[in-house]
Amino acid sequence: MKNKSFTPRTPVQESLLARMKDDARAIFWAGLDAAGAKAAIDRACRLEQNCFWIGKHSFDLAVIDRILVIGAGKATAVMAKAIEDILCHRITHGIISVKYNHSVPLDHIQILEAGHPVPDENGIKASQAIMNLAAGATENDLILCLLSGGGSALLPLPATPLTLQDKQAATTLLLGCGATIQEANALRKHLSAIKGGRLAKAAVPATMVCLVLSDVVGDALDVIASGPGVPDDTTFTDCLQIIHKYDLEKRLPKTILNHLKQGVKGHMDETPKSGADFFNRTKSVIIGSNRQALAACRKAARRRGYNTLILSSFIEGDTHTAARIHTAIAKEILATGQPIACPACILSGGETTLTLKGDGRGGRNQEAALVAALQIDESPETVMLCAGTDGTDGPTDAAGAIADTTTLERAKKAGLDPQSHLDNNNAYPFFKKLGDLMVTGPTGTNVMDLNILLVREGNRIK
Image (cartoon, one colour):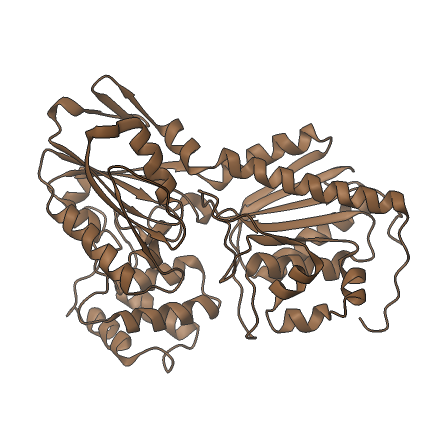
């Protein structure tokens, strides 16, 4: 980086790149608007006199004694507001758990703010209050359970005899070891008194409907918010295998290892499995997903004149590898016009896994953008925006970042070494100094991440 020289760009090229970055931001916001929690609730729910519809399910409110609203997640406050707008005074009571500073004014539903991604004492209090409300419901009550990404951390009620400190230690390790969300949530379910179908069990004999804003690849209900309302097919044995896979035996609290081993021996109750009778009284409806966001992004890109391709909504795996695949596609477009011709917009969604090796600040999306910057610096006009739809990327106030073919040149002028920032997982200050962070604030939704790759022909790749 120190000895690298850059070919100066013409004012026309600089203007084009600035416009492309504006395009990328506008395309991202179009995806957010389409997958917003309010829009999702409004699409899924409607009230016709005394008949309340949720998707294809209908409920005669004339025979319902009480409507109770519970839930957890980063987008759940906005979901709750949309439900209040529809049902108003018909809601008897409600309690939801949301991340700090993600509240909105509500009239009938109590909001309890708590820690995310590492749970805290307020999360314990909130999840216990939610469990108590569900457990007190009767046969003629209707429980609406609003779930969005972040629900796992915001429902941290530990299984006996585990403590909050045990859960915090496990969460911190899982966030940095490279485990997938499926693996992390398998462990969370087996350390919990509310996740993995246990909330559904507590709600019997009431009817419970889970309205779910999906933040996981494939919209797997047992993974979203660790599936408090659906069966769990993972086991204590699976959890020990995951711990061994990531070499966590000596790093996890001994209380957790003992709990899991006792579970394998049959001394702890397994999570509720498919076929349990009480699941007959629980329904789940996916009301929003990454696919809806990508479809809206495609429309927005086409309106701006881009040939557009949705690559996948199933992007998983290593963050660095996923970023390099996207930039390789950009180079293929420029070299051969495949899979689509310039001006091109490649869209993808999902959730990659970032293995932490340094102690810097950032998240998987900011890091993906930094990896992209290192790959596209000698390309013609190319822009890569990587951002989380919830507005939070890792433990930062940014949703992600945007890189372009001048990022490294501008970094050199600013005295920044991109490789050292990458090695230390320190993408946040890198992009902050360049003015290329994506800072949205709480978005009112959470449908995983969006990647927006824009490519226009400039000087051909040699």
